[in-house]
Image (cartoon, rainbow, N blue to C red; front, side, top):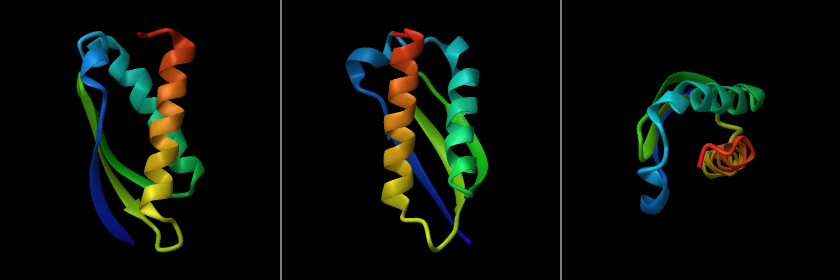
Length: 84
């Protein structure tokens, strides 16, 4: 397993609108995305303008594909929940 960490930036214009009280539900959503792809989420920390994730990535999963799924899914989830 390869351990990697990627910051996931949020656009500056919406970062001031993302409330800290949404960080727990957002982290649960991201956790679900990672575990459904059968990868191991080691740590997650949602900030106002970005998220830190530490993932145990299996060799058969491309990092760019997983991060793309996380970014697309979490963005859609935030919009569906009308957090912004």
